[in-house]
Image 1 (cartoon, rainbow, N blue to C red):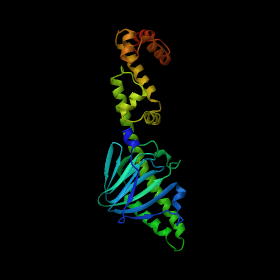
Image 2: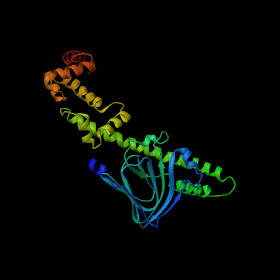
Image 3: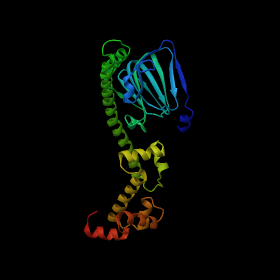
Image 4: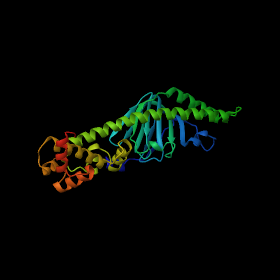
Length: 293
């Protein structure tokens, strides 16, 4: 997958049948840039549409209003239908294409800064939008106002932009909750696997390979969702198992050390004493006399 990512193509092909309504450009005074939205618009796509980026500096958010499109990314692809919101965090390779006769979208490029920076280090995701019609209608209204010469058109465009930012944040906050649940489940599955095979020589590279993500991404996810780094979590599991075995069995300390993944009794005893404050043999005596694990 890393090779696929490195060789991801750069393509920009938009045919004459496609139409775009931008709510920001050099020719208009758009209020969206004050909210760290790099670009935004409404696209009515037909015929030829093929955009591929190896890495993009902004977070891309697509809402499908009508028709179908497809997003392809390393190791996966998703067909997008009415009501889908797709989020492509900055730096993720992705390719967007028409899937069928037409594809109408509302889209946003969000700056990778504090306002939207929490989207970084995420995976590409798709879910159903809650505010699709509101977002589509308000975006059309913003477009009309920034191209209007009517009284107070700028004031109204500012007001409408505040609305669109609220709807956008609502959609993305929904995504945060859904994404967090997905990540917690994924981490739980990873460390269940570890707990079932504590004797293996676990390191960050092996953990990341088991979870099918990069070591740096695994480290970030563990810090964000577990509050500790990956190997600290592994050591916690090893010590939990060791304490249980010391209490429930009469197995030699060397055998317990091997069972929970330590190469020798000395390394295990040092790690155990560092965490528990006493040696494994003394812990066994105390725990058996008190009966409290």
